[in-house]
Every structure is written in structure tokens, then in C-alpha cells.
Amino acid sequence: MTTVSEAIQARTSVRVFEDKQVPKDVIEEILGLAGNSASNSNIEARKVYVLSGEPLQTMVTEITTGLYSGEDPDPPEYPAYPPKLQEPYRSRRYACGEVMYAALEIPREDKTSRIQQVMKNYTFFGAPVGIIISMPANMLEGQVIDIGIYLQSLMLLANERGLATCAQASWAQCPNRVRSCLGIADDERIMVGLALGYADDDIAVNTLNHPRAELTDYVSLRGF
Ligand SMILES: Cc1cc2nc3c(=O)[nH]c(=O)nc-3n(C[C@H](O)[C@H](O)[C@H](O)COP(=O)(O)O)c2cc1C
Image (cartoon, rainbow, N blue to C red; front, side):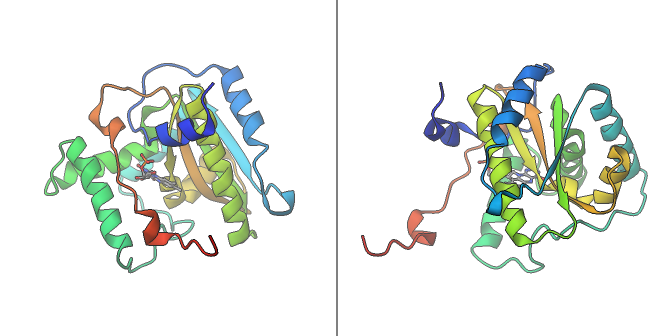
């Protein structure tokens, strides 16, 4: 059995998946266990849409067709970053992209290929399972923390079972389309997606090793 320490070290974002279904009982086990995640006052303000097979394909086709056909983009559910990302966050974000595009062998000037890679978000990177997590529209930052905790639970539980994931804020960039495809009312905010499946281990982009900040950059140990 994988320990939490092992899962947290082994988890990495995967953007190419094997063409292999995830058994329903494994999905149900992950969802059941993730339900134990902490949330402030245990309000569990989330809805979780787990798609596979035909419903997944229908949503992917509808959304990618719409995005490629030059329709107006949706207003994002929330800004992915502040308008002016300051240092050191700006450089970290830049480095993150560079590492990924280097592994994909897509140079900076090749805008078309870079856009195509971004568009793969809207196919869940070909994963056999796509998850959309929403929360009631009147919820606040406190509940966003709870969503993040739940998302991490899903990712670690998946890893423990030999599955791979990629968290995807991209789905919050086209919330109206997601709501329309899934029949979700306007009173739910589309917060994040998660691609879930078996990693293709032979692909460089699945083995990125993003450096992490030193603890001294952001941890303040006091009284030890
Ligand atoms: C909330 C959240 C949203 C993310 N959204 C996306 C996304 O839309 N597309 C994507 O390719 N990666 C996305 N990622 C993956 C991050 O880029 C990735 O976690 C980061 O580069 C660190 O790499 P690692 O996950 O391999 O450790 C997201 C991660 C998180 C936690």
C-alpha cells in the first residue's frame, strides 16, 4: 500500500493517458474515500460530475468544436491569476510553461502548436475519466479552500491506485459551455476539472520534474 508520503512525492501532472478504461468500482472507491476530506464546518459545498464514455465524448466534442469555431469565449468563472503576477510567481509560472513545452519540443515561436496543446485541456488530455467540480455560486474563499483539499484527496487516492491525474483550472475558462453540456444551473460555479486515467509512462511530458521553492522561501518556523 502506498503511503501518503509516497503518493505525495510520486504524484505528478499527467497530460497523455493510455487508452484504457478505469473500472467503475475503482472510481467509486476513490470518490467514497475522498468524501472524508475536511471542509470548514463540514459543509461539503461541492458537486462532482464524473464523466466517462459517451457523456465524456459528447462534452469534449461540443466544447472543442465551439472553441475552434471562433465563437465568443465564455467569461471565465474566476481569473486564473491576478492581472499582474508579481515576482517570484511570474518567473515560476514562466519556468513551468518552459519546462512543459521543452518536453513537448514545441518552441516559443510555434504559437499554433502551443495553442493546440492548450486546447488538449478541453479533451481532458485524452483521459478516460473527466471530473468537473462545482460549488454553489454564493460560496466564498473559505469554500474554495475546501474544494482544493478535496481535489488533492482525489489526486492522492488516484495515485495510490496506480492512476494519474491532471488538475485543470482550464475548465473554469469556459464555464457556460460546461454548464450547458452537463445541464448544470447558473447557481453552480465551475471551479476545476480533473483528468483521470492511466499515464502513458513513455512520454517526456508525463515525467516533468518541476523544481519546488525552498522551504525558507515561504515557511516561517517560530518557537522551535
Ligand atoms: C488548481 C490547479 C489547476 C491546474 N490547472 C491546470 C490546467 O488547466 N492545465 C494544465 O495543464 N495543468 C494544470 N494544473 C497543473 C499544474 O500546472 C501542475 O500541478 C504544476 O505545474 C506542478 O506540476 P506537478 O503537478 O507535475 O507537480 C493545475 C494544477 C492545479 C493545482
